[in-house]
Picture 1 (cartoon, rainbow, N blue to C red):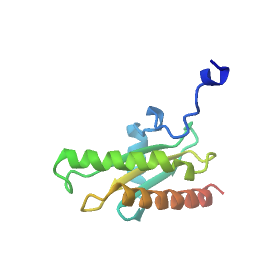
Picture 2: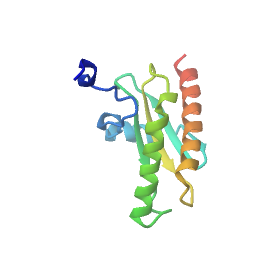
Picture 3: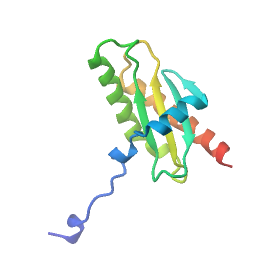
Picture 4: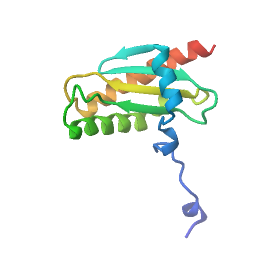
Length: 133
């Protein structure tokens, strides 16, 4: 066995528990700030937080739009997977808390969700750069 095989692989495409936004205080503060933007099928809230070690996200699919939990979980999984793949669009020096709220009325395919999420992340990256400077 080579020593290279024993070294751990970098987790660049992982989605760890630390990347999930769980703090009630931060979530309430973000909703009370009323600063949001929209890229169909997402409404997103974004705030810069110096205390974070990495970016954190929360995905919300309203029960009002999708009554069946199976549908809500499907959309949530697709959004998280798209974020996991495209999170490299966000600059590493900015530590953001992001809430994605799915406002579409139909279940989109993974390809459509992935395309829109990458556009959303690029827009967030552009906006966060302007706000930080």
